[in-house]
Length: 226
Image 1 (cartoon, rainbow, N blue to C red):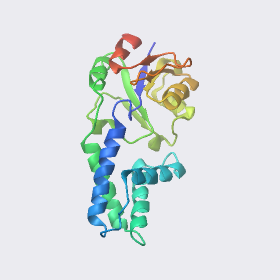
Image 2: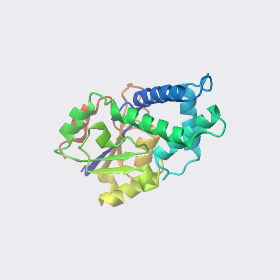
Image 3: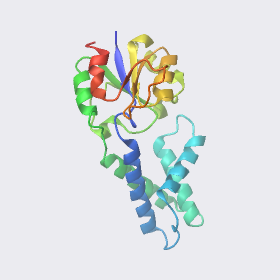
Image 4: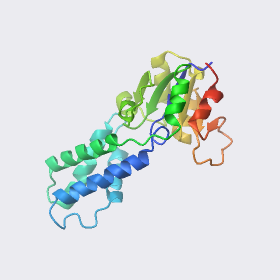
């Protein structure tokens, strides 16, 4: 029996890569507009991405993603002007977040799939990111577990153990749906959950995957009526 169906968010429900790229391009333009002429020469979106990844690599599981992004812009600004500029770093962070959340990019199968599943299943989110469902216009989820709030991150199976405990449901009655083999499928199964790999690119399905869909609308048949 399926008690809950939990979803990853980034690259499962929304095209986070596109959303982030658009927001970073806008943030770069803001930096170029506000910093002294010539100080941003050679600065690229990839530099902004790299700075963020470097900060994230040393952050704890409970560090808010917004704080990681702010620290990355501090690093970037400090590389452009001696001593940095805290007000500018904070302003550009707000600019980035507004741009990212103002223009969500949902995959076309998401809303129809959730609309079909919601009457039959309890739906939730387990995510390492900060793409909050309400910012995507999705009100289908009864529970939302974000790594930065729990203090545990995928692919740590302990996150899934925590979720099962919180919703008071046997692990074998929980399903995780996501695009990452390691984070969403193997880690969930290690915690005793069922798991469905979202394989939009229709890549070859590895032998360790027992359930996969290329389109989330196929979940209704795969999971049955409840």
